[in-house]
Image (cartoon, helix red, strand yellow):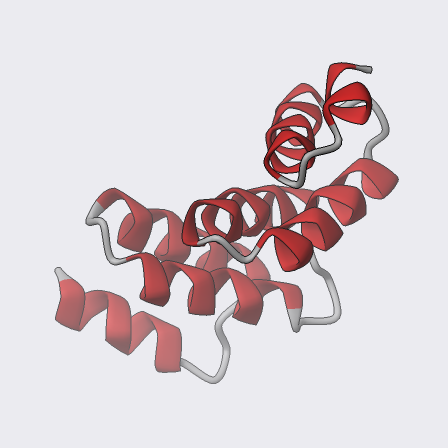
Length: 105
């Protein structure tokens, strides 16, 4: 499976959606660095998706890169204000950053 995912990631015609799906697959396989790279490729396209921002925010939060995670959570919320998953991820990040009041809001 990993070889197939690597092959898909290298395709020159890969869409943001394909990179997103590859990232989700890596995440399910607990290959978090590869998942992060795939979501970053999805966001580097001309059509970044809110879902990729949320996935990346969640993974970066788990990895301890809280400031980068917050940037992606905020980007997701800017794209779709009130998104429940992005709101939850941002609250978790804010709590870990020590901003309990903002996390509870």
